[in-house]
Image (cartoon, rainbow, N blue to C red; front, side, top):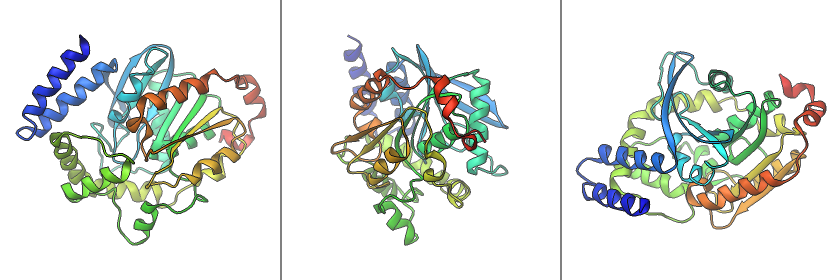
Length: 320
């Protein structure tokens, strides 16, 4: 009955698809959040009004989105995890509905400091930590700095693997073309196509609303991209030997970050498990949410080292 009602609502929304794009988009994501059992909350962090999704039950699972994305990257996979985990998915400062402050800086250290402040504000003592792309980059660095807080790490095509083969995105960046910075709806459609291996139907209103936001954010995100990645810190330099149990998940047709990065990380991390997704692109949790959730749940079943034994073997540098 619930799915029938949801389908009816969706049909009604699509009916006004091109008339009110922003209204339709907000309606769709609101429905998606509700189906995943997630509520929208807000907290002030470092002068930013930070919006996050919160719901489910069990051990906390903190989910960090990629560049240009937001917390709504996660509800489809959260739908399959919310009976086992309390899901917390923030819009990072500078993204989604969280604050954009032109007077602030958004370096790796800045964003990690804000992430830690969020953890403290929500009183998370220990939690599972996941991230996709830029979010994986931040999650990996956070786990390396605070291994005592992170029960397990879930890296979905993380940025920052410097010794991976060159991706299509990196080739474009080398020519001065950054598809992550959008100037038009056509640019947004190109980016959307690059992110997935199998094109999925996306209502026109959603594309129009997201493209409009990406165009409005272009100048600010250009600043943020430069500050975050201009002096990038490769994951190879911080993850080697990290004892935190880690699931490395990557789509085998990722055009943004080459899948060879998965094996690089797997060799560095002693307690890691590798999950390569067939016919999947850069956002496996969106392309195959059920399969992604199943991989994470199966990973949790393995008898990984205890927190105490991990703390005893953690390198001193990982605690900086």
